[in-house]
Length: 121
Image (cartoon, rainbow, N blue to C red; front, side, top):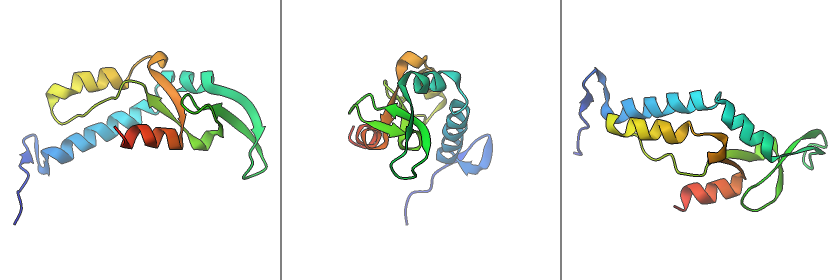
């Protein structure tokens, strides 16, 4: 039949896993407005170049891993130190400290390099 996940005690309509997924998602949305993220992007920006796919001028960035030059839509800001997991309140402090680091703890990677780092740990 399978194991039933216990409900989260403060809101029993959610499982504990669902609650922490909600919390991670909320913190990621806040991080998308976090100024050091944009400082990291600014430091990797090389200028406006004509996009090969669209023919339009757009900002391009240098990937910190492979050194390639990519348009904005093809890069992602990466945490140098992995943010880790958030599966309990005990994890929250370290997770938040690593997620909301200074721009020195961030780098810009192309999608391929970011995927390689993320999924080949």
